[in-house]
Image (cartoon, rainbow, N blue to C red; front, side, top):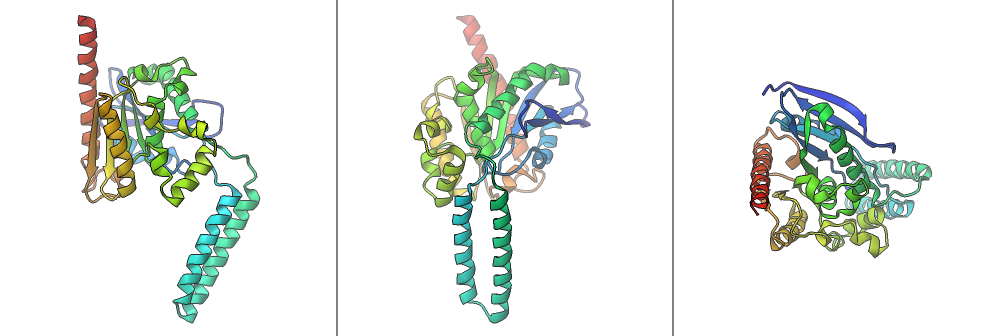
Length: 323
């Protein structure tokens, strides 16, 4: 297969803002397996453009890669004000231990932070965007891919999800909680053939053990516990959940605990699952610089897993046909 990759940017898969995807397409004469890439950013930041290097690396391995954007949450003005107080306290503590010139510099920096925060709060008038908007966008992108994959020589019967951080959470959620794809008359456990999660978050209980995690839960998932339960894949694992590859950076201490919880739950339900940890990497380098030392095996491990999953589904279908 040629390593020449065609890129088709800014394809709308819905009518809402941010509902766009880019397609990375290798030259091929046969329909290609599809990887839907979901970026990270704590559900508040990021975009599909940052995943270009990873998408190109996967496309060169013979996959039709679709990198999507989704609607993002914002912090409330009350949360922003609370964070500003912590920042101001840190500046004051640094100033006490600093010399006069350093204190002046810290004062100027604090003033700039206050001005930027004030401008943000004045313009932050939009209603808060919470769950399930993010995962609804992911489900809409999957539905679009199933309907239009043939136009780009993609095979919708071999569709995989790959996400990093918050994107890994969304990939796992849409693959476990069938509700979101049922809205598009699709069964997640049949449409999604495999899920690759890089440094994902899977449990609200784990997330809420840190101050920043509690703030994220409040701004992304709201205060209604009934809605929060629908937002985490750990509550929806069954024996028919698609195969998973769970990947973590060695320095991702907190998120590795998320992975252990999710890994053993998947194992307990008989789901095909593999877990890998990469030494010398952190939360960010795990998802980029895939040609560099320490993360050079990430692409090979992803591709190897997807090939294994192909064999898994072939064997499973053969057993069903036999009986």
